Length: 308
Image (cartoon, rainbow, N blue to C red):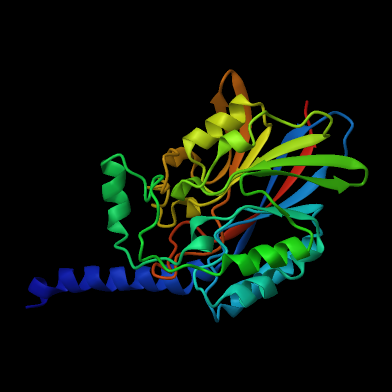
């Protein structure tokens, strides 16, 4: 009897322990990633950029709120928010509470699909199936008619009132210590809201630095930004793969980006140009899949330095 049931029970116990770790510990084990990126003109002082992404706030997530508030102690020069702040239509006040200290700093933002629409319960195995079929989540399709609409307008108005610059299919500027920083952003390609034609033309002439910002790093957007000559592209969306295999990495990216570049700093080539790209693994999860494995939640402090 023991031989008959011992192995299945052992597998079940290991699976349960893994799920408890992924949901109870790692999904709440917030980390700060630090990177240096040489993209500034010679002679320009280093700039410290804090990127936050994929917060996916659900009401009651006190530890996440406190951790996000603590990031203001890094004293960044400016903040880049790459979207998916919400995973609960009631969580706008908690997002603003979490980001409140950071709203005291200059910042820019784009939105992701979960800022506009609430998530749905979905079998995670479908992501692997869609990858095998050459599909990637919504992959440019409109959300279902029955999708819950999140109150994104409240986020937008609060961000704008704090002086953060909205970059949803828009260009914007920040002035820092006499430097002119230019930004070009896209609305979320994952739900086909990107309109590159509205912002095409490349880095702004006369700016000390021009950066590109987008939520989901679909290849069409990376190709366009890189071909136009942006030195650095900032994105989120992938959750770093969320459920990864130790010593192997991510299985999916939830877009058409390859898994080798699912998170962290890499490069992208298009039109004879090369851009740095940073994809944040984000600090949250869809409320219906509140687990992470071998991929802890994160924010990133990027120190931009002069080019060699």
